[in-house]
Length: 124
Image 1 (cartoon, rainbow, N blue to C red):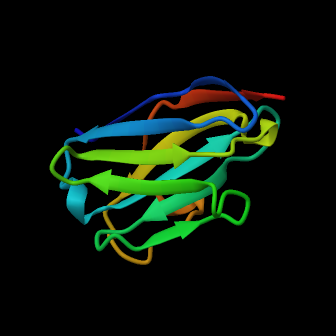
Image 2 (cartoon, rainbow, N blue to C red):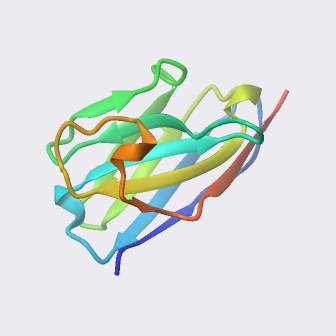
């Protein structure tokens, strides 16, 4: 069965950096749409970034220029490099996957499989 397991979250001061990882199994990782989402307490889940099977990427305006999504197909691992972190980046971060493979957006309804999340806390 499909499994997505996030890691790398933690607490950091504003301006700092973190790298999230998402280990995947149970599907052909290289062919899928892959995305990162986040949800802060009391707020709706928000799309952060996506990457398609060809490596084409999409970012939300709120993270563009600060976050970088990447993947290692050989390791079936998705990454999110987060730099210049702000307190408003504080949230639970989730990775997601969908078999479409192309035209990978950053809206949650597009994704079929989800991880359990990893917490990111940014203090001012």
